[in-house]
Length: 129
Image (cartoon, rainbow, N blue to C red; front, top):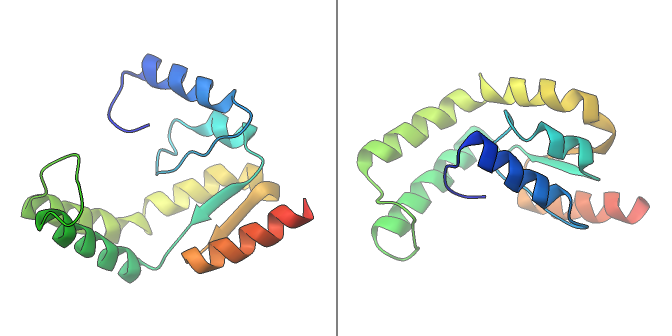
């Protein structure tokens, strides 16, 4: 669900997605995807350390600026700085709000710090369900 849509369009697309047999939604769209949390069998909250996120942001910026990786928008130094600012605020502001929202779904919530941990936990959790 990339791009920006009007709320009515966005909500209709979300509803179409969660009515399917299998689906995955990714991103930080916690303000409007609450319905997907209700319908999900498993919720995975990938919570890497801030320094790891910063490294990934910088790596992605370099790859996209050097055309080693495609981008939907022009990467700028200003955009990089904004992303790094957002990264530093994420744990203080957004992460707490997301955890509060997910509290009511804790029986199906898996919190992991790395892709490796996610792979192991998801394989284990899905095997016992």
